[in-house]
Image (cartoon, rainbow, N blue to C red; front, side, top):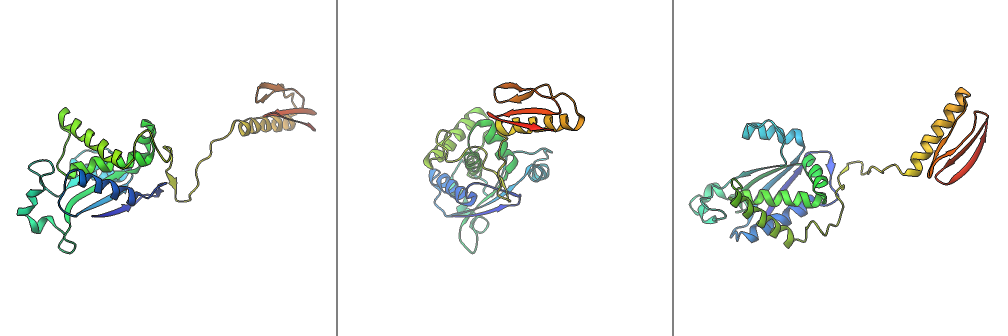
Length: 241
């Protein structure tokens, strides 16, 4: 099959989204016994972008996580025989592939939902692609029974690929800006150092008693503007004004 992927955001993932998307799509089609090679378009946008599509096509002025646009009007879920009477409209004339439809994902929702559910961005991305592929194959979740069918099939697809909640190759925060830099949390040692240095500079400038400073084990040091003893993160030093 062919999967055309476009990422129009400034977010890059810690995994190959085209490779993961294609693997999920192929497994979904294998599960549904699709007899044809298929073609799917996947667009990755942000909340603002997907909100525009949602407003245009569903008259809902709000962002969502995934939008699915099936090209086939199934009479019954995954009954691909329906395309036999619409060969000209259902297949790419050049490749001969079945035109299954389009998928739009919001990167903002992928990141937020991965954090909320406590699994990786790869898991959330793959889940949404699997969910949308089932829509492209004629499934829906209007009622409880339909939703349960889709949930079971989604888990089968992801489990077959080893993309589970329990075994994740990467934590939930693998979205990086194109700079490739990740945000590093401020360590406790650095925090204490910054706080104490700020207090010391204030005491030296305004010539007032320092009173105390914060150390790793609590309130630690005493001094005046002329003599300040600084203890941060287990290290001790003296500064004479």
